[in-house]
Length: 182
Image (cartoon, rainbow, N blue to C red):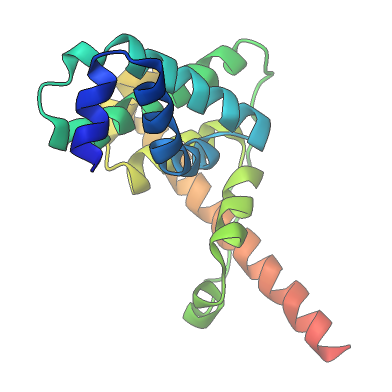
């Protein structure tokens, strides 16, 4: 079915493009939400990514590889949004804190929405680097080149992102425990 959707969309038929959009919208949104600070920005990323994909549909030579090709467009568009926002942001002051490690069951109890919420709370640079490294599988050198930062800075920011997430998970667990006691 996906193969037919992609083949038909390559003809640039508006109905086929719309069907392709609807079919991959949830997939695209799940990626964009991990990178963006809010749902509105995620929608912009998704729509921009689809526009880029539609403009370059003729580059899709293997219909089975479309999803990976489109994922790359989504990640690059997300990074572009980050860069665009970087021009308007101030300096990032992040302190590293030795945090206790959460109990594994705490993590098991988190829903997808909890995890996305925690990711959204990270400062933008930390969120982008965490997603690119931990979820997309980029290497530090690739991330550094994409974001125009030193590789050592990329490693530091990834460590800080993990520390911040650990702190937030522990805080979330304490909040839940306090509610359970009341």
